[in-house]
Amino acid sequence: MRRRSKASLTDVAHEAGVSLATASRALSQPELLRADTLERVRRAATKIGYRHDRVASTLASGRSSTIGVVIPTLNSPIFSDTLQEMQRALAAADYQLLVASHEYDPAGEFAAAEKLLSHGVDGIVLVGGSRPDATWQLVERSGTPVVQMWCGHPDYACVGVDNFAAGSIVARHLMSLGHRRIGVITGHLRHNDRQRERFRGVCEAMEEAGLTLPAAYHTEQSLSVPGGRIGCSILLELTDRPTALIGTVDFIAIGAIAECNSRGISVPGDISIAGIDDIELSAHVSPSLTTVHIPSRRIGTETVARMLSLIKDERRKEHVLLPIEIVDRHSTAALNR
Image (cartoon, rainbow, N blue to C red; front, side, top):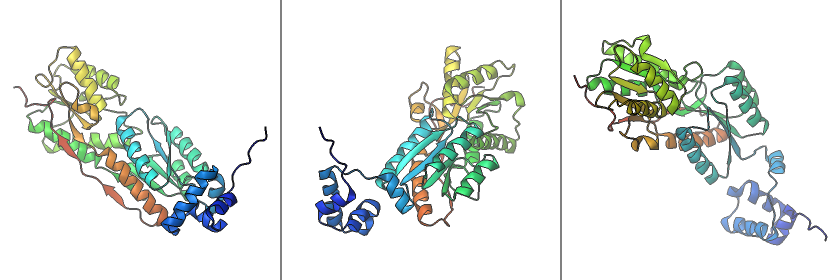
């Protein structure tokens, strides 16, 4: 049986009754055509089974209609919420999102960024601003627009939140309830500027209230429920154990609640626990988690808006800080003296 030849752009133009140039613009620059002409070309392409050759289009226009994003981990609801909103916003603008992760490894982030850039992405999104100079040099040499999320280097566009303020807000909330012995479970601080800033916010809020955070009251763990359980178990073994705990992400705080529940320690009767992020699960654990709301979905949509703006005008490198707020639920209460 003879194989049917692949439909070409010339075939589309003939079927639609337009010039080859018009057919090409319909697929690469649709905003330049009248709506009825664009619809006629698209119907013709569908009828004859034409598939747009992205590689050829990229070579011709210098654009791939793809945006790359490098995130620390795929195993996080806050990042998945952000990615979902990015995908929706990019699809509406006829772009495709390409995702890579590096598990908080700077070398892994470099490799992921290098791979995405080699695919000719029109823009690249990075999380945070703390990374080796080699990664920034890689991005600079590529000439590719870059937007940072959550926080970032002042020389590049960023959509994020004040992570220092997030730490300060949750610490002040617990102190307003009378707590003075506050333990903190963070992620590993070395390669995570969001975690460093949240921890710094906690420490400075306590210092302003005349309190100090002893080294024994802080432990670094994985950003996970098991990490929260391990961190909580360490702090519960202290002679003067904390009356309140902060998990600098909700997963850690949820793990701490689970550890207390397994030991018969009442939350918040015996110990108050609070987090930062406000992931969906936090409202449904028992007790429901007091936390700081981070607008992860809006970070996604605003990041796309900034990226599309940068692609059109590379001089616009503004920093956008989105609002955050405490969400007071049932895992915190006034100190039971």
